[in-house]
Image (tube, rainbow, N blue to C red; front, side, top):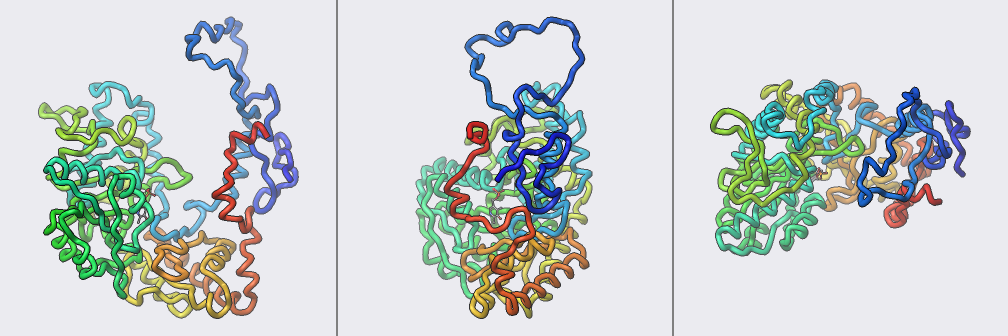
Length: 504
Ligand SMILES: *Cc1c(COP(=O)(O)O)cnc(C)c1O
């Protein structure tokens, strides 16, 4: 049942927080209502036909919601209170690095000198912006040990596709047609998806019982048709690939390239660099490692950095310091072309540079050290309740298993995660990586205090007792949140785009 919101107040049957139905903005719409009031200027309005050429004029009325500004703000404020956000509490969603985003980065991005510039403005008028991008590119290369970078890709997955297109361009320039990309079975789903989009075939290799790449299995699938391998290090079970130099040598020996999925860069910032491990191409998720807004918070950015031999293929035009000392846009010699409109998600780039500059090299190293310390603290603290899938020190995240709960109490990883939300923490990542039964992947990040980690561990200990004594409480959780259990299959298959709401 949907209740209309009362103008100036909250939805009649919806408490401010918690359960209750919030109407859609279209259901709140009243014909003729507007969100502004302007004084009359007595200047006759120019007919639309005089302003817009007839060919571009849409005669059809666009079904937009008509609400007052007050109702509009109340609606979205109510909705915002139904979310869990990085600003509200610990968000240990493994592999996503949901760290707190410092507000000074937003202050930088709010500078009108940056955010009022049109991306199409000529280089002569946007020297500061181009210099910012050159500066960011150099710093990202320093962090990763690479020679050059593109800032265009909009996210990690877009960076992966860009990296694969770079691999293809590199091999094809040598008249070398290669077909396969190797991926470990613990990889993130975007890796094989990007390989397919990039026109390559996936060869999967198993992890060994340490949770690491099985070097012998890797060697057995290498050959002259292998374009490269995609890896993240630390890998997706949060463990450092100890044989990374041997892996790199084996792939390079057959003429393949190494792609570094930088999603886990937070673990190694300022400590070790992908370039020094032997990687040729790296993507970074600025919205993970460099604390720019993530997910619903806005667009991301997935810059790709490469070794010198791949620089000529990078997307362009690229922000460049020219010979005369000014800044401009240059297309690399054998560029694969654009992978994003304009220059990428620029305000994200500005925030990331602010984050890097304020931390400095030693600050970034401390970020990694504290991220790793926090994850190991949590792994150790929870070991009696939720054992680690691989019993050894982890990097910035720990993968625990709830298979004992499933076996003893028919309580699954999903149930534990849902119940944790009711105790005031965001859920960890569940059922990833796929190779761990009933996986719960916690990435506390460096921004959580010892007190917060302790409170989260205590909440999980309480849930463990509940699972044994009142398992239905855990199986049916959450009941105290605005939305309880949803039918996840139906949610994915029967999409109702909001635009339709106006017609319903
Ligand atoms: C997040 C993530 C990606 C994809 O990055 P997006 O920025 O979400 O597109 C790829 N690999 C791993 C391991 C990740 O955690």
